[in-house]
Amino acid sequence: MGTPDFTIGIEEEYLLADATTLDLADAPEALIATCKERLEDRVSPEFLQCQVEVGTSVCRTVAEAREDLAHLRRTVAEVAGDHGLVPLAVSCHPWGDWKAQHHRDRERYNDLRRDLGGVARRMLICGMHVHVGLNDDELRLDLMNQLTYFLPHLLALSCSSPFWQGEDTGLESYRLAVFDNLPRTGLPPRFASWAEYQRSVQLLIDTKLIEDSTKIWWDLRPSHTFPTLETRICDVSPRLDHAASIAALIQCVTRTLWRLRGQNLRWRIYERFLLGENRWRAQRYGPSEGLIDFGRGEIVPFADLLEEFIALVHEDAMELGCVREVDAARDILVTGTSAARQRAVFAEATGAGAEPREALREVARHLSAEYHHGL
Image 1 (cartoon, rainbow, N blue to C red):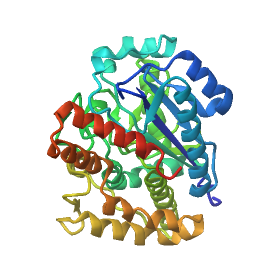
Image 2: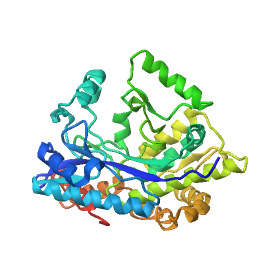
Image 3: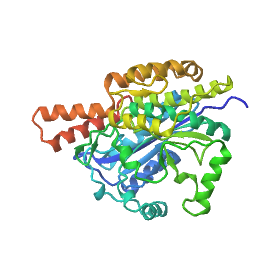
Image 4: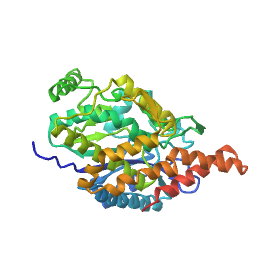
């Protein structure tokens, strides 16, 4: 087996808000059409009319993906501005009400609404997906089993959804609490082979429960459309540089696990209920309360875990040319996650005498500014 390409692609979903009030707003069809004229298939509408999705081209390096993503963000912002709107790269709007939103009247989305019932209506959430190119199916499956261990670490760095319908949820990533209401979500099952995975998916197809594996929404999955392993657990990051750092960690740890495999080594596989405990800790606390190190049998401060993560993938970061982006993941702990920064803005506003709704509006203004950070 030759060396995989380890190409990278990044997808982000954005919310659209009125430029003055910052209330959620439906994207007119003219906005989507103009974006498509300028970005072609790198932009698409999403389930809800207040959302839009972008995806980079297939990139060789994280730096290339970052440059492409910056162009996508700038273009969406320019086109949205022409319609009196602003994009927010955040996983939950601070006060948006899902009951007031409308899904797009297209066959695909109508089918989703019909299949998922009321659960679909609550999907007022956005995420970031990172694809890493692996052109061998058995390898994709093997690395998926191992990479699952690192999903809580990646989630902890990306948390950007503390508020839901105007209230502080107490969670760093409330998005997952919403998304987990869908079927076929959460940590991926462990499969012994690609054939076993295919048989499981085919059973759902044969019973007409799903059309294909695009209706499987695990935190990590083999992509149906591309020869990639797709990491889906992350909240969308308001700051572009933080998104690039998280993507770099995903690309590098994928190569690390491949490199260890070539040395007849592999990452230990832990039971899903143990990994689920770390997933919950990341969802609830972000990086602030640490995660369980199962080998040590204790909770370890996240700063220590991040240093171990960076050291683990350093050789691969060198090979992939993204040492700077990997090292810059430390900045997320220095500045705080987006969830922590949003809470700080809210606390400052209320401390200055603002009513809760106006304080939340300050959070939205902060998010609008952060969308452009690093562009």
